Length: 104
Image (cartoon, helix red, strand yellow):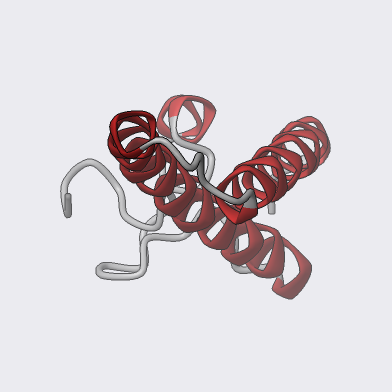
């Protein structure tokens, strides 16, 4: 079993940042719109972009939580398809990877 202490710390930090970002996006989207219809149309476009960014953040949050859970279980770093160890280089690049490069 490998020591993933550094990776865990990085994931926890990234998780906190993403949660804060997602909360900020959620707060921005809850703000009332402008009364001017042209301004409201522009805000609507911006809201769509914010919502997409928020969705990506939520997806990444879930992946990080899953990786942290796998660390707690002692199954982190194992490919979910073939069961082989995921190369450390892959986990450094994509710390929430669930498959090895051969099974991608």
